[in-house]
Image (cartoon, rainbow, N blue to C red; front, top):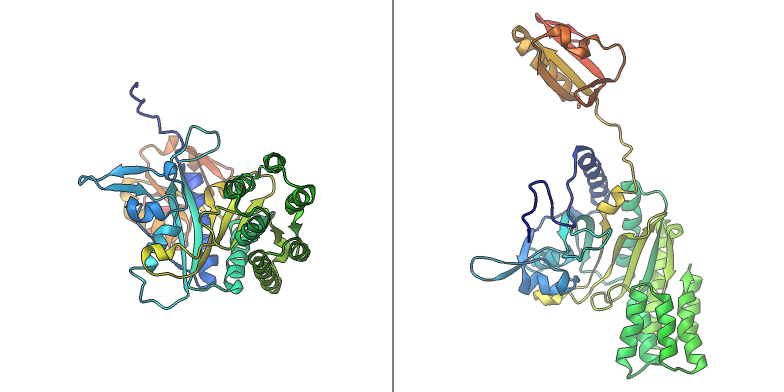
Length: 406
């Protein structure tokens, strides 16, 4: 293998230049402020975790984990998501804390990938975990907060699809009892949104026409609360019916929040069925084929860390959101101050005054005023060395031009 050139990066990672970092921090601060307003407190966890604890508990498949060995030969992983690390903290450092816990985060995470277009090995997530509350109210809270967080991030047009893994588990166990492999294949098709493959699998199973129509019928179970009524008629499984009743209760709470216009029920939405235990959801923005948010209930995870507790949460795909939004908050004014050697102290005092007002100030000692172009510029903003400045201040012989002394 040839040695990489000094400016090359591994596939799947990227550099964030100043303008992109500014936008990322603006989205981060707005979303975390929104989450804080709902009572969620920010947490930070290590980039590196033990494979045998957080790694095996993660929802990320084993082949997508970045693994490394420490000097003792112990296998470590780069965190691939934030839910498992937070579950570890909730079961250890916060084990005496009262439930429910409301925790938020903004972190970079890592996934080992093949050389696929559009996939990133490192990306940012901003999300919450609500630990210790099994109620429909808790599920509705995280969905409503996901709506508020997307709006805070600047995403204008989006829909959140909610489903429940119990519905499909109950329906398939009722209709395909003892055919575990077939059930898993159908679930896998739905997880990939491969509806053509789902229908092909139904044909391969050589089911009776009424049963095939019943199982094909779930592909049409998308919409508002009326979908719950249709689903209750479709299945007699108590597991499936209990799941639908849970979704109905979630919907009622979302209506009380006033966010149901952003939500639809999609009973083909299953999430990772080996990880989620109840309600799941994904948020899709207009004109983008990938989800910008995802989450759901995962009541079994914390038991792996010795403190069983119900939990639900979501993560925004912050890196994808950057491709959608242009942050609209007012940028701080950029000011350029030039000064000569005899005026250094006064110029730097002037710079401090502007900075206290929240402005961005760049100072520069000027050797040749005749060639210092900003001093002669008549239009604003002034372009100087690749940057735009709203105000240019010259401090010469302790006299200020273009600005005002305090």
